[in-house]
Each structure stands twice: as C-alpha cells, then as structure tokens.
Image 1 (cartoon, rainbow, N blue to C red):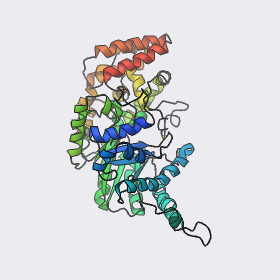
Image 2 (cartoon, helix red, strand yellow):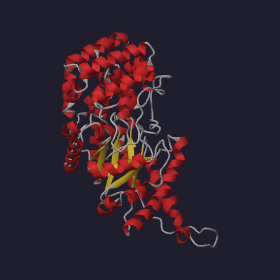
Image 3 (cartoon, helix red, strand yellow):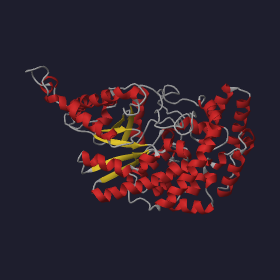
Image 4 (cartoon, rainbow, N blue to C red):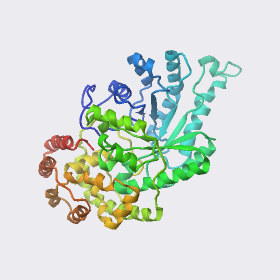
Amino acid sequence: MCTQHPDNISLPFFAQNAVLAGDDEIKEAFYSFSHIGSNEQLWDCEGKEVDNFVVKKLLTSYEPYFRRHVLGKDKHLTIRVPNPAVEKNEAKIVLEVLESIPRNFDVNNAFYQDDTPPITEVFVPMVTKAEDVIRMKEYYKRFVVGKKILPVTTGDITVGEWIGKFKPDDISVTPLLEDKESMLNVASIVEKYVTSQKITGHQRVWFARSDPALNYSSTATVLIEKIALQRLHQLQEKLSVDFYPILGCGSAPFRGNMRPQTVASTLKAYPSVQTFTLQSSFRYDHPIREVRDAVDILNETKRSHPLLVEEEKILALIEKMEKAYQKQVALLAPMINKLSVHVPSRRKRKLHVGLFGYSRSQGSLQLPRAIPFVCSLYSVGLPPEILGLDAVDSKDVETIETVYPSFQKDYQSFMPYLNEDNLKYLPREFASVVAHVKKLFPYEENHAHKKITSIIMQDLGNENMQLVKENMERAAFVRGFLG
C-alpha cells in the first residue's frame, strides 16, 4: 500500500515543486498504480483539506489506464480519516469523507456502467477501543446510507426517491493501533469489533511503526508488534475470521527499515503481515527498477504464521529499553526541537497529530513527529535507533533475534551514520550509551555523512540555521532518506 508519508529526500519526476500538494498527489496515486505496480493507494484526509473529487480526477485524467484497471476491483483507493475521539478539531472531516463515498460510487458507476464502488474502506487512526471503529461503521450504515428511507418532510417522498440510491450499503473500517497498550490489547479490541458487527469473512488490522518508536524506542516497538501479531493470530484461530495485518514502515531503520533492498528480510521478520506500507522514500529515493522488483516480490509473497514469541521474556526487554530510551530522549529534547523546525518539508499538510507524545509521561516535554525527530538526530550524527539499546546485553540480543532475525543486519545499517566526534556536544551520558552499542554492533563510519554532520553541529552552535537546514538536506541525500 503506497502512502503519503513525507520521508523522501528526492523529488518525484512529476512534482511541480519540493512540497507535494493538490493535483500532484493525484498524479502520485496514478504513478503508484501504473509505474510502481502497487494495488492500493492510501488517501490521507487527516490534517489537510479533503479533496472530494479524487475519484473523478483519477478517472478523467487517466481514462485509458482505468478502463483497463477497474478502480475498486483491480486498484484500490483507501481513505484515512481523523479519529473524532482524539482529533476534536478535525472531527467533522469524518462526516465529509463518509458522505462522499456514495457520490464517488455514482462517479464510478457512470464510468464503468456497473456497481463497483471505488471506495470501500476507511482507516481510523489512534484506535484505543473497539468503539472507535464501531461508531465509524455504524454512522455510515445508519446516517449516510440509512437516511435514504426517511421522508424529506412529513408525508413526502423519501430521501432515496429524491436524491437516488446510496451505495455501497456498507464499508470496511480498519483500526490503526499506535500505542503500546492498544497493540498489546489488539485481541480484545478486534474481537469486540468483529463480533458486534458480525464480521465473518476477513478483517484488516493496521499496526503503526513510527509513532510507537517515538515513544518506546525502535527495538521495543518491533518487539511490541511481534507480541501483537501473535495475539491477533491466536484470535484468528479462536474466531475463524481471517485477520490481515498491515504494518506501517518507513525507510529509516527507526521507522521500519523498509527499503527495496530490505524487502526480503522484512518479509522474513514479519511472515504473517499481509500489507506493508510503501512510504515516499521507498518510492522516490531509489532507482525505479529496484522499486518495481521489490513491489513484485511483495505482491507475489503469501503470508504465513507469525514467529513464535516467548511473551514474558520479550515484555521484560520492552520495559527495560523503554525506560532507558525515555530518559535519553528527555535529555535531547531541546536540541531536537530546535533542529526539527528546519527539516525540509515534502507535503503541504499538517502531520498526523499523534495520540500520545511525552506531555503525558514526561511533564512538559514535547517532541516533533517521527520524521523530523529522526532527521534531527541523524543530522547531528546520533542515529535514534541507538537510544535505549544500552539497556540490553549480548544475551538479550540473542533473545531478541529469536523473534527479530534481521536485528543485527538492520542495526548495522544505521551505525555508519554515527559521528562520535559530535558526542562532546551532547550530554555526557551518551558517551557510555554509544560505547555500549558499539560493542553490540561493530561498524565502519560513513565519512561523507560524518563530515556534513560535523558541520551541522558547528553551525548549530553558531546559530547559523540557514546553513543547518541546507546541510540537513545534504546529509539526507547521503543516507537515502529524510527521516
């Protein structure tokens, strides 16, 4: 599933400028389908203006392609809406999106002369309870489609007779779980949802990767997801409902390490996952042939059972790393916040607001979202994947590798971007953190990246923020991802 996460440093060939917006995202959806070979495009209605004419623009702008590839059957457009329980200021966007689904059905119907709906599914972010998805599904059935049987006025014709049919009759609603408690509680949340809605065929469940990493550390998040996938599989056996997990993953190791070159190891690490997100860096920061080949592998691979997890051992490791990570992030927060506002923008939209952040657990501490967070730390030569890893020893690494087979390989991919010369500018605790992690993951430094991050640290000290911004971009080109 291609998404609109702005983690790319290179620009797509169709972009009018560095910040993708408006009709560029229509072109992007077509490009994802036609050139990359993806069968699904996420359309994000969270934190930006809703484009209610996406379907019409796609069909009219690229008619020959969509005559051959039916939208809603061969290619899928899936909408992410805000969660009204969390994003109060964005709540009414949900109503706009849900009301647009029958109208987009009419557009598709006129184009294909059949009843294939172009949009059949919405994603609800930051789900913490079954009601978050139950309400979305019930609202659509009761208030969007259900009003067709109501009279316009007393004794008058019905809304359906006046306006026409409202199709589809029902939609799929997929929960996006983004915090530790909700992911570990996935079985309870999903069971309540599927039983209340009498879902008997299949149900998708999306596990976030970036935002949990921001709160608990990258490695702890992987382990949380391993337990969640195991618990979801156990629920599948119990209910005889097929659950199709989605894993959100970006190109930075901190956010998933999902690049064309790592597809094989990612599939091995997550054998039960049905859908992986292909974020902007995956698509635009690599040669198109490598991207297409990787997408072919993903499309052809069948899912299997999740890796077996000894939950008690893994939960203990999660707790250790989470505590160490949060202490370290608190020390770095002032520098991160100062740098993050200078991270190059790649989308004309507000970032997804996030469910938690440190304001709840760390007093008044606030942090940016995951992409600028990652970019900020890489830009000073401190890969964020390092944080929290000083809490584990070589024996713990062996335990982690039983459920995370590419652990060593993944972590050796970011260590070359460590700049030990910059440690003198950081709180003194980080010298011992880095020394410990170096023993676990030997590495050879990337000299080009080290040179740029040394310059960034000097310019940061001199408050020369324009040069900082320019060199943050240069360093990202060396890495092959923004954040």
